[in-house]
Length: 164
Image (cartoon, rainbow, N blue to C red):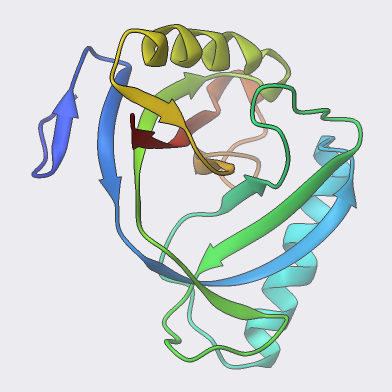
């Protein structure tokens, strides 16, 4: 892992990072996080982006709008986000995600075992002067849009934190 400005590297997997504000197209839904449903919602969002002449400028993001310690993947409040070039809000489609400080971990492989990465992050946070604050955001670096092999998925998991 290479060092980037405004990043504090703790080890090769878990670090603290400033996440900048980001303009996104988004869709919210309540449902499961299973592969097929997830891809369907992303496809709907891409159609809306195209229909509104927006340009995708980043990787897919998934925000879980619920208790970050006990996410129920079978019935979650999920916000699918795609970074775009538009800077003005379109109600129900485009908004700005505020910047924040996050504890970041990289998860490798299937989403079904992502709780092991969450557990490492929770253990890491216990030994810092931070506490969890806000919704967990997954940044999909390699996902179903890139490979059909779920073992090759790479997901940056962002846990918003504040200093205590």
